[in-house]
Structures are given as structure tokens and as C-alpha cells.
Length: 126
Image (cartoon, rainbow, N blue to C red; front, side, top):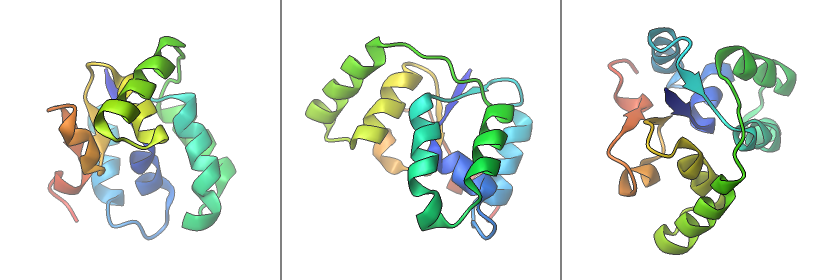
């Protein structure tokens, strides 16, 4: 399984995102293996105005592409990542939710806590 953070979905739904082609390739290559969290879906809503994408379309697309199961222990691990590694609340939640699985993201802050980030920006396309 592969955890997808918000960057991945932004790249897919934002009309002029420079990572869109790469994210689409990753989505196709990993169909049925991608999951995300409710925090990612909430973050999409929070940033939809700033990034100017259709929020209903983004949430619908994200839920078609990725499962979104929940685990309450994630919150405690996220708090630890914030305290110990200086991650933001959303990034800490994403990292905790992914646990030992790879994370699809362009956010290099995950590199400090995992060797398994699937870098959207390095997927062979621009």
C-alpha cells in the first residue's frame, strides 16, 4: 500500500500544476494500492480557494482514487512527529497515518523521517 498526501491530489486536480503528468502516472502505476486519510481530504477543502480548484471535484476524485480508513492512534504519533521532528500538524498526521508505508509527495520534510517518499517531482516528467 502507498499513502498519498495532499500534494498528490493537488497535482491531479489543479489545472496548471507542473506535477500533474507525473502524479497521473503514479496514480495509474499504483491503482488500487493508494490510500489517504480524512486529514488529507480536509486539507484539500482548506486549501481549495488558495489553489483555485473545484473542491467537490477534488474530494470526489480523491475518494475514487484512494481509500480513507481511520485509526485514532495516529493522532498520538502525529503529536510526537510535531514535537520531535518539527513537522506541521498536517505533515505530522500524514506521516503518522502512513506508518511504515511509502508516501507520495513533493514535500521533502518527509525525507527526515522516512526513506520511502515517492517524489512526485522526480518521477521522470515535468
